[in-house]
Amino acid sequence: MLHFIAQLFILSLSWPSLVRDHAWRTRSNSHRKPTHRTRHSHKLCVKYNKIDNTNLLVPAIKGDRLCIKIDQEECEKGINDCQRNLRGCLVLNKGYKPYTSRDLSMKLTKLWHTSRKWRLISLGRGYFEFQFDNYDDLCMVWAKGTVNLTLGVLRLSK
Image (cartoon, rainbow, N blue to C red; front, side, top):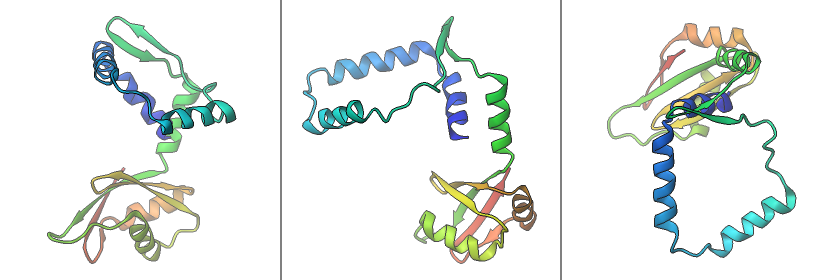
């Protein structure tokens, strides 16, 4: 699902700005020598060949845009994955320390009595994505609505 979202994000990039950014990075970093750590990790990637790029989509340039064609099957798979997801925004009361993902997951597990597993993905800055294995669990959590926690409120959206 995140792979699908990343591909949609890439579709919106403008090709000239991508080239300009790359040229700036290569000019500003050209005087630096690669560190030992960089060379070592590169050797590990080459040695074990754990990077599988066979299923990556091939980008194409159309006019001034970078485009990636997504076939119908992949698009439907991404849409089906998103149908079992909820997004949440954690709004904390002023002065409170934010929850860690683990703490939030434990608190919500006690509040939501789901029949199957669910996963919490931190999107940063108080935003989270909840992936449910079961659509009925998603409906049950969505029906409960906003979750009142001791330090703040978790507002859900589809």
